[in-house]
Length: 375
Length: 152
Image 1 (tube, chains in turn green, blue):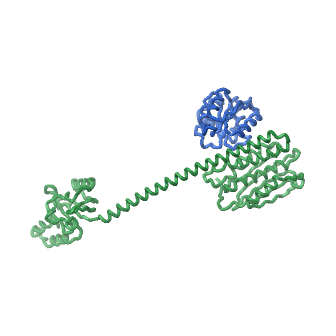
Image 2 (cartoon, rainbow over the protein chains, first blue to last red):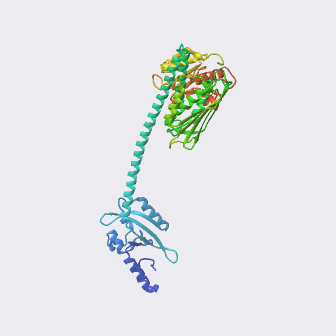
Image 3 (cartoon, rainbow over the protein chains, first blue to last red):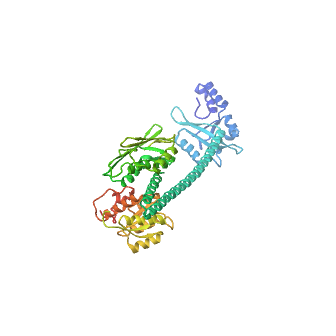
């Protein structure tokens, strides 16, 4: 085995040890190895080098005689990390093995990254006899790693800058949306106020009634706009929320003793583009029933239902009033025309059944691919 | 209408909205005591007229100053502030002292119901359901200190 000191001394004491040939073969193997190796003697002052193989000399650029008897610190230079040096020093002081990547310098001053393994060697009695170091020039790998790290940093900074730009653009868009939303709502309030002011001043009862019904339609649109953008998904509109709001407004205008209103609308998130015509359609159908199905103080019931059936929305307004055939002729029939136009706009179909007594309007509307179940 | 008439100050820069509100308030049996279109005017009118209720828009002729107006007016004993705004997101979490928010576009029914609710609470009426269409402030909802302007 490798003795207390160095292979040379091991060779010298080979005869006594009785395994001279064995020891010499080991020493030859160390000398022939392509791995740079060095041994130091901690038993002597300043832990000097007592063995260095030719591979070590090739990597460091020093001749063997130039390194023998010197402490390994001559390999350090200006950019050697003091923390790495401290790690080695601590391991040596505690007699423990250490693996460290450390920047070393060749004789000609060129630096190289040294991945070093330092192992303390003990004799049979457990006494620390030798430090054995394996060196590896990892400059190439290290440079590639550094380049990769720098590239990653550049990329990360780039992504961060892009994210900031995107966030700024999004913030601006959101602010714009809020601004437009605010203006639309405010304008709807102005329009509604104008119509209601004119209705208050109209002398003619019929004229007043027309203006009031227009204000109601504007009110239905206003409700839509108040509810738009309240979902997380701004492209959708929750029909149930509209129906709840609309039902309260409708109920406020009727005598609950005379007409019982029931509203049963499922949670359906419809595309925002459908919101306004759909709201107007519900308003027209329900208002027609409430206004025209119960003349002369007649009592009855009105039911508004809406549910999703596959890719379609099924909307029904039912009443047990006088029915179509008994209704007085309405030459203007604006509400009925409006219903027809809205159903066409929404690409749906409408069936109005005369239940005699009573009427049922059955509307089927395609919801489109971007609709989904409500909350 | 329930309870005595309320004296209402309108703080709104849109002339038509303000005028229609005046008509509606009178029709509901209350008294519209004045209309302010700017923040300073609102504060001065409130000082001179001591209204029971102020309906305050967030955006006034001098900018988004309705929040400050609400703070000032709600600090006056005896004045209940309600926001009427299309920009409810601008109202701070404590409602700047206001009792509630009526989101624009509102219907006449909501204004009537809100005023009736305030009248009920001011005159010690039996507790009623909060009116639909009005978002009440945390203080009024009862999870904080009771509002001094709205005795229960």
